[in-house]
Structure formats: C-alpha cells, structure tokens
Image (cartoon, rainbow, N blue to C red):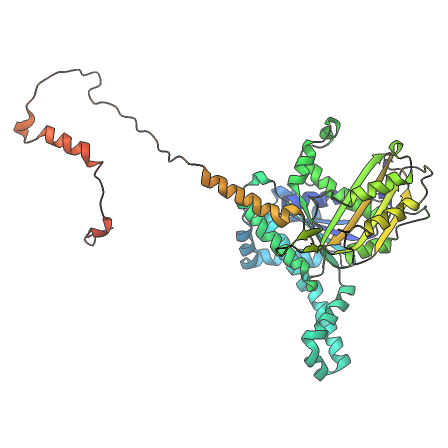
Length: 486
C-alpha cells in the first residue's frame, strides 16, 4: 500500500456537498475514499442545475445527486440568485436538500463550488444562508432564551446587545455543526466578466466567513490558475496519469484534506499528533485555511535537520493557491501582520532512519520565532511512521485572517489589465460588402442620346449626387417629425 495511513479512521466526520459542476467533481473525489470494509468514509452529495452535469459523477450515489431541473444558468450568478429567491419550487428543493440530506451528526459540512460564474457560484451562497437558518440560528435563539431565564428580564434587556448575544453565539458554536468552504478561482483566460463576478461573490463568501453567527470554520480559496501552472510543469509520467488540470486540481484538493484527516489519528511514535488538536485547528476560530505539503524521497533524508528544513520551507506556501502575505506595509508605512490562529506541523516518514524526534521541536521553535509569523494560538506537532511512497512528507496548516495574493489584489489587477487592453485596441466596424451587377452585362452599346428633352440635366444631377453624401449633415432636432406616423 502506497500510503497506509489514509485507511485510518478520520479525525473529523464530514458531509461533503458539491455545488455545480466544479464543486460536484471535488465531492466525487471525496466519495472515492473507502475504509477497510469498503464503505465510503464521507457522506457526499451533489447539487446542480440540470441532470446532464450529474451523469459524469462516478462515486457519489445516485440518491445523493439532486438536480434543480433548470437546464443550466448560463454562467450568470446574479440571474441565478434571483431564480433561487423567486422560484418557489427551486427554493424549496434547495431547502429540502440542505435540511434533509446533510448528516446531522457530522462534525463538519464541507461546501465545495467553483467561482466561474455557473451554478456553484450562486447556490453555495444560498446554501450557506439556508444552513444557518435551519441549523445555527435556532441554536442561538435557544441559548438566548436560556440566558434570559438565567439572568432575568431586566438584566437581559439591559445587556442584550453588549453581552448576551455574544454569549449565546459562543454557546451555540460549541453545539452547532461547522461549515467549511472550498471554492475555486477561475483562470485569467476566463475573461473580465467572470473575474468581476468572482470578485463580487468571493467578497460575499468572505463576509459570511467573518460573521461569527454563520458558523463557518474556514474558507479555502483554491486557485485554478495556480493548479494550471503546476499542471503544465508536471513531468511526462504524471501528465499521463491526469487528463487535464481540473482533474489534477480536484484530486489535489481532496487528497490533501483526506491525508491530514487520517494521518492525525495515526500513532506509533513518541510524538503523535492528537486528533483532538487537529479538530481544534480546523473547527475553532475562522478565516482562510492554509495547507501545504512537501515530500522528498526517503533516501535523500539523512538527518533530522533535513525534516526541520522541509517544515521551514513548507510553512511559507500552500498547495492550493499563491502564498498569503503575512506582513504588509499600510498607507502610513507601518508594518501590519495577518493574525494566525492554531498551527499544525505533521511529518509522515516512510521508515525509521534514526532521525530522532528533536526535528519537530526545532521546527516549532524556529517558526514561532519568525518575525513575520504572528501566532495567536497554539502550535501542535507530531509525526508518524508507515508506508508513504518511500518518501518523507511534511504537512503545515493553519488559519489566518489573511487572503491569497491573487484574491486580495490580483483579481482587481487582472480586471484592470483587461480594461486597459480593451481601451488601447482599435476595433473594426465591419459590414457586408454589396454585390453589384451591371444591368448592361453582355449588352455592349455606344449611342449618343440627348436626354435634355426628357427634362433631365445629367451634368448638374451628377454633380449634386457627387457632393450630396459629403454634405449630408442634418440637425435632426430641428426637424418637425410630428406629422410622421411611426
């Protein structure tokens, strides 16, 4: 077995919901993971606007696939949002999907969608709001009622906004199912309209993610442009394994999360990663979840310091998007830092090589002492040994209030580049050239006629015609058009 640990029991039980074509493909990858008994590890669902896009799924059970029967939404999320709000039948179907098919006993509901402007872009926003209305909001209301009975009406009314609403939210957070969000950013080549839509809807999602009442544990803004660039650099044997960059991206997203979710329940070494610690990193606080994985052949690892250096390299980046700027200068020239909550450092070693365990402590100390790494929470570490493709792999993961560079600044820059390019290019005003056929074709004559007797002044008329078009300048506002029937 290439990676023995991926058969471990997961640390976090999940329902994975794919919206639209891109999100459903991610969920379908999650559905491919089986336990030792051959049973699917995760409860996986797919929702799309038409039946055809659901037929390409291979692992999600048919009963877990739901179509809104809209025949597609034409890559217009604004229109799709209006349909979801105004169409009672569609709205009810989405509501039933969220209320009846998401497992209530799971620790996390993972919502996945592409932000390319199709079905997923709009439905994931509505699904987050619907999940809040059905699951989180009632819990907050119940906690408020309990607090009211505990403190009395007078104190409750006096301190409701300043104290007790926050208390109710915190209490409800301990009982509610958390939401994780994975959305993919489009390619630059998708054009300015898509970039603008993505910018709008990513702002909506980020605003929801920062609202503590919505129960969103994390957002991953995976970047298809980042995956495309990586895919084009793959060696030939890897390219043969994957048909296109989209399949490469979907597998990378699902594999990475599943590996972490199972490796953190492994043991057998003196410094193990507690599954409860992993749950804290994923489920506590909110913000961007940054995950990176770095692997090297085990025969290139000669000492513990090699593993430590892999951790120091891995913490700087992400497998799913461009790095996040953890420090930046504001307009006043002051250095500002992105807050980092709990941090996880996990190593998986294929076989024992007398590396000791000090590398994990050394990595933790150096990362914590980094001047650009502002950690507010705890740092959790561990390693395990087992079959791992004859490799040493390190995983680094944390949540932050920062955003990937392309989302924070890049989309706006790309949109402005498109606009500037359009302004600089002179476009053609095309027309269809007329086919003119001479009436005298095949009828050649030379006759001298005096047309003056017909009352025609040919010379004057030709002169007028030659200049008429050049002088065709009419002030249309000065014309009396009232007698013309239109």
